Picture 1: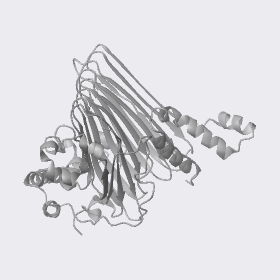
Picture 2: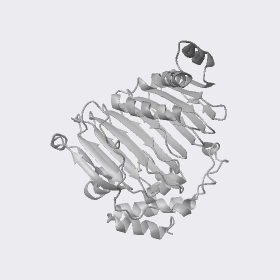
Picture 3: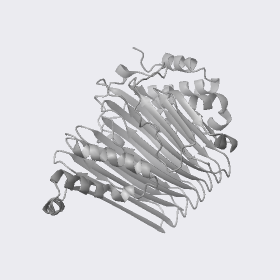
Picture 4: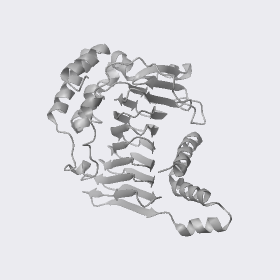
Length: 433
């Protein structure tokens, strides 16, 4: 079995017929990966997530793939926005199997393609941003692993002052049990776009791995709505680095839905780099059985007069566990910022556990920063009240859970996305733990 070696990096790059600069980039990343130890619970960022049962070398890299799959679910890449998507891409195991893009979007000078095509044909746009100014290779062992062995993913580029005429939708379907996709979105000054990024996998009893990266670059006065929906099978261990950089008077509206995987560890960060930058992060997750979600969020105010707003809500069943660690940072000189973060957790069964850890690191004296976190069980008084009106208990529980998630749902501007998430929540409420 091929493992994560230097020779495997060279083989992957050769298989993909990559330019020299990407091959050299991968080899430098492999040196960093090889020099770093696997994170352990003695590392602060990993204190509540144990990777000792992750057998990396038994999984290995994804070197080959033909994109053949007959069991792709019909819901993948279905329309989720009121306006029909103008760009749709489907990948199987990191290999593009479908790409549709309207002539209207092409006429606007927009580039929407798989990452490998982007590396070969649009290096002038990709190379300056690929794991340089957003997610550096030195971010950690798994960032370096991704940089060395990434395969598949989506590149979206919107030129200056262009408002994309229709939304974009990308979907990954995994069958091999190992995916390393990379999403890179670049909006030039004054550009606007909507992008839905979706991940799912087939049922498989063997341990699987997804090591992904998402880089969102929202330049001055640009506006990006980015939706990420993850519904991997229960055998997948997911480790991702996701970050958005927001320029002057720019806006990033980031929506995250996480329902699948055996274990998820995600680093999700917004960098507000220039005055007037605005970012909102809205997250929903639901764990059951023995699922483990660890979401590490950062709202970094690197400039004055910036705004960030984070609201994550999660429900838990069975023996599952969630961890949310949040931090708002204000650098010296980042005056007149407004930062808010809240994490709310609903425990549906006593065997589940949620850890909620908000934080502030403020180095400026004219700021407005607040945080909140709660962990609570189902309110039996509410359940009793509904049942006293003739509503069966299972229906009453679903109603309470729907009401719990509603404040985050109201922040999602697309009915199709809301419906997709709501249907999975109801499935999980009714599932056996």
